[in-house]
Each structure stands twice: as C-alpha cells, then as structure tokens.
Length: 391
Image (cartoon, rainbow, N blue to C red; front, side):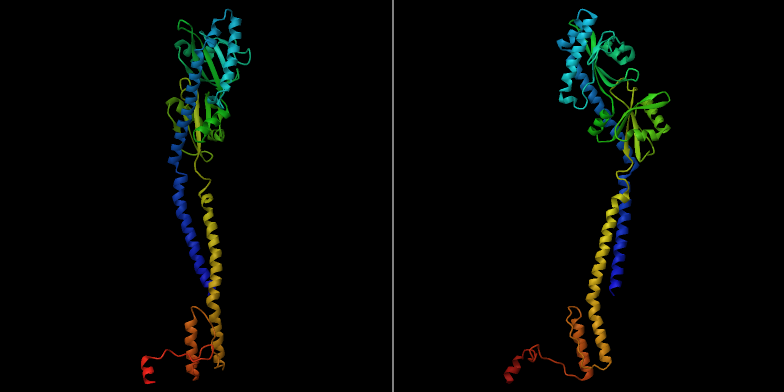
C-alpha cells in the first residue's frame, strides 16, 4: 500500500512541477527576450548616451567660455612677440589644466589638452610641452575655423592617427578689448574606452561603441564592455547600419541579434556636423542567459517534494499496513483453531473495526463478551431513574 501512496502522490508532484515549468517558461519567454522590447531598449540606450556626451560637451564649452573672459587668458594674445605669446600660452594652459583637474565636475574626464589658437586658427601653445606651436589647426579641423570666424562656442571630435590625437574637443572664442575675436581657447578630453565606460555607467550600463567611417569600412575608436566584439561579429551588416544612420541622421536598429545582443547606431550629436562619428549601443537579446537558468530552482523544489512524498508515503503506509497485517495474521490463527484469540490493538482509525471484529469472534465461538474494565469491575451504563424507584 505504501508504494501505491508514494507512486500516486509522486505522479501528482511531477505533473504539477512540469505544468508549472511550461506555463512559466511560456510567460517569461516573452518578458525576458521580447525582440520589440529589446530593440526599444537599444534606441533608449543610444538616446541616453548621446544626451550624456552632448551634456559633457556643453559643460566643457561653458567652462572654456568662462575662462576665456579672464585677464590671464586674454593676456596670452597681447604679448609683444610670437615667442612671448607661445610661452604665455603654454604657461596659462598649464594653469587652466591644473585647475580643471581639481574640479569635481571633471571627475573621470579631466582635460588632457588645453591650447590657444590665434584668429587664423594657428596654435600658439598647449599645456605640458612645446608641441603644436605653429600648427595650422583650422586647416585640420574645419569646425575650429568656423568657431573662430563666427565667435561661437562649439565641440567636435578630433581623430588624427598621424598626430596621435583622439579627443572630444570644445572651443571658446577669446575677444579683445574692442570685442573682436582675437583667438580661441581649446579644451580636449580623452576619447577612449574609459570615457565610454563612464558614459555607459551614467546611462544604464549598456555596451557602447564610438566608430568613424573609414572608406568602405568602419573604424572602432573606443568601446565599453563587449560592444566591440558585437560590432566585429556583425560584419558587413554592421557597416551598412553605421553608414545608413550617418546618411539618415536617425537611429537605426538591427533586425536580428548578433552574439546574443541587439545593436543599433546613431549619429554622434553635439559634436561637429553630426556626421563625424557614430555611436553604437548593444543590449542583451535576453535579460537572462536562458529561461531554463531562471526556472531550474523549480525542479529543485520538485525533487524536494518527491523526497517528502516518499518519506510521508512510508510513514503513512506503515501506519495503516502494520495493524492490517496483524489482523490478517490473527484471523489466520483463528482459522487454524485458536478460537480464544482476541485482538488487543489500539489504533486511532482502526480501533472501531478491531472492536467489532472481536465481537464477531465472540458471537461465532459462543464466548460471552468481557464487559469488565481494566481493574476487573463490571462495566455497566448508569442506571435509569426507574431502576432506582423499583429498588
């Protein structure tokens, strides 16, 4: 009997566990790996990262514009000789850079370049060294020329392998006493993996990639997390997506995941004309590695339930089987001639059956039923009132 109890209850547990698994797997699959939701997450990540980088550029422009109004910065352009202006430019650039490093607003994005250019876009000097003096930066970076000519602040991406320049750069015009633009202050922050990692941490933690078109290919400049691996695996499809977003100026998201990630691209906004670089984001195609990984504890609970079923089945089977086995053995003994045998079993559920069985044996053998209690006293019901009256 105990095995029947165990098998029946174990079957119920197994069926309930499997039913719960398939129902939860169906419900969760749409939640953790819904392609539409994942694509929307890519678009949100791109908008957030673009906004953060644009905010960094605006913050740097304001900082440079505020410094451009100081007498120390304007004094760089009033030195009498070219050598004097270059020395003044380097000294002032060093002071500005040291001051920026100490400011909390520039945590993890302190300027690596502070430089001065004259009204024609020729570099006067920079921080840290005598390099860059006399370089025609306006010819290399048209956005700088435009900022000087219009007298407006601006930001751009400087990428020049020959000059070893890879920077986010902001400009602020410097004006003389007459209000005319006499030059510009240039401030650049590193464009590297650490910068994109900082941006990712501030905007939700998605993998980011900054890339630029390079002929028929796309060159990855910096990345955070596994973004570069996703782009490398995307191959020609990733290149077409990147070029397409530069042409349209809108966010584009790939139709199919690559390396278990959905990826998308957007022009880098707030830097130059919006066609200098592309920002890419990659998000996991599923919020979990697999639904099985999420639901495996369910099978653990089912296994524990099976163990409990076995234990409970053994205990319950013993509770019922043992007294039945004793009754069976006693009846067999009665059939073999032991007519004086009576059952002395105490059982909360079978006690009534045992009492009736003893009564049947007494009736069959003609034995008067023992009505005394444990101490030998007659066990009689209370006398009725009529009996007392007759006595």
